[in-house]
Image: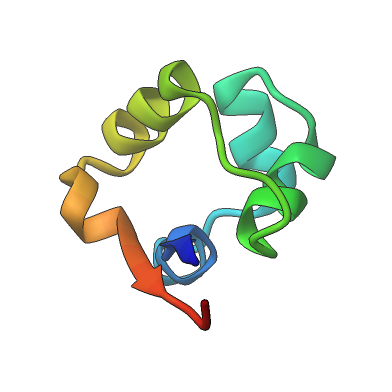
Length: 70
């Protein structure tokens, strides 16, 4: 099974941005950020594009596909 992995928490912390600040900047809830960072929720395409723009990263820099057990 393939799983989407993201580096959002790592990048956010490197840039010194809190979850609350990021939530306000992107006009989403802090709970949504928590769920995405904990790999419990994959962002919509629209939110993914906003995240890429927010961090000024390419999709490959922020997201990867990981092959898991079948």
